[in-house]
Length: 288
Ligand code: ZN
Image (cartoon, rainbow, N blue to C red; front, top):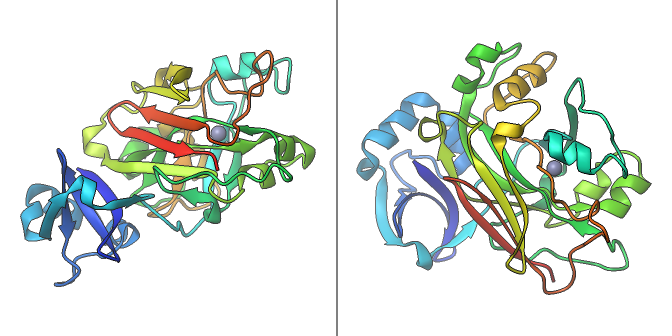
């Protein structure tokens, strides 16, 4: 299934996308009214919905008639993010920051308030940062929680996948040593446009991902080149804390980001940044 959160006629709805059509899930009869409620409901409801969506859908509208929101507009926890998780990104950054492929994953988080819609404007305050940068990433949505999840079992815990642009204020990121502030500015976590459920992506390590700025390609790689694949990441994260339904894990960005270019490139007023992961879709966000 391709699932969306959206606004339609003033109400927030969850929908199932088929082609150019959004089937909006009924707000009655006990059907989940938010994506988090849908994820919390568990595998039985997911299967019921996948096998017979008509039972849950009470309205079909053109996709163009709804306003897409981030699939999880307000996560319960910070978005967990991997740093230096593609070998080419480590190499290109060697002069600037980290030189070695990490032996253990680098993990930081983005504030829940940074979440933006798939087509929302990215607010830019040049007094606060002059170094807004792009990072296309495959993000994992946890469906079934757990602790000490074995690698071999880990993909069973995934609800689905989405796209995140981990927009980063490099000046703040490096000035404050820890990444949190530079990664958490308002609107700097565009997410979506859909969650593709895990059954449709049996191998998360075979997805192409790309970024364009004003139509010019900046990043082009494949999740095949991740240092720590999705299953290992879930396993390692769950060693000492629970993963819970609705948790979001963004799995790092490949080479081609702006701050290591020569000369460095950063986003400016009016720029259109687009991030795409194969089989999921494309984010389109303008800097304002
Ligand atoms: Zn990132």
